[in-house]
Image (cartoon, rainbow, N blue to C red; front, side, top):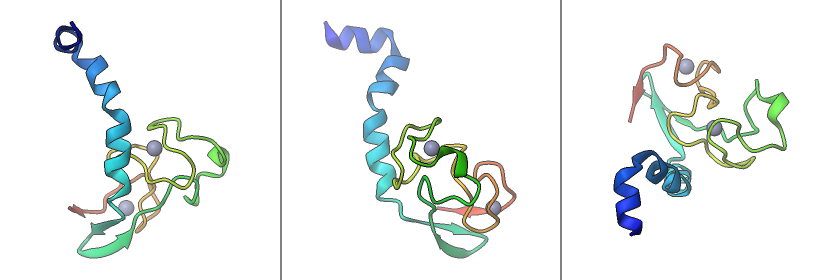
Length: 93
Ligand SMILES: [Zn+2]
Ligand SMILES: [Zn+2]
């Protein structure tokens, strides 16, 4: 029965897997930008995140001090301090 529900509602399945994605993101501690290696910025340590301090990320729901889920648009670029998903830096995984 449960499996049938998952097949019929793939989006619900994606949400159930979210805690797993959060866990995976915690093991990605560094990112390579423009050929240089940077430590990723944790939620709450961004220079532009004063308004969200002490709260979970409104986009990916990680707690303060955790790494954002990959692709979260609240993650700050450690190189140019813009929005990581939108800035001009070249990401090499
Ligand atoms: Zn986030
Ligand atoms: Zn950047």
